[in-house]
Length: 77
Image (cartoon, rainbow, N blue to C red; front, side):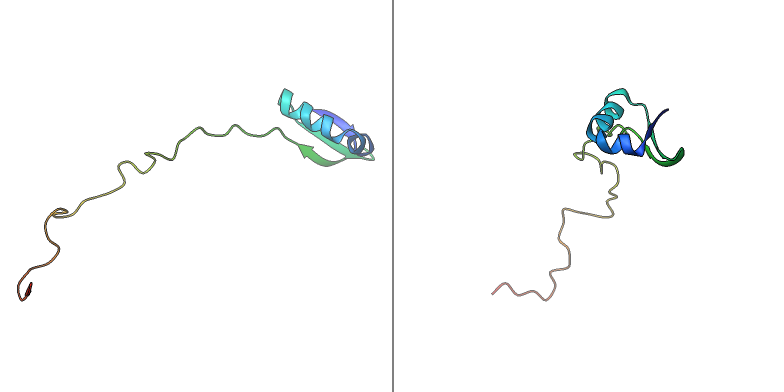
């Protein structure tokens, strides 16, 4: 792991962050020789798609096509 003083990090922040992203190696920022922050590369994003992500999670109970209730006492006029 590379170490860099906080004063140098402040001056070259964007370049240092790009180096961490490109190389994948972490960076330790120190102040008076003591660790202040650890810069880590970003994690890989999962390429899981949302389409089909709920497949197999629905359970049908009973008739889903037929009428919901009885038609007794229903007058269409």
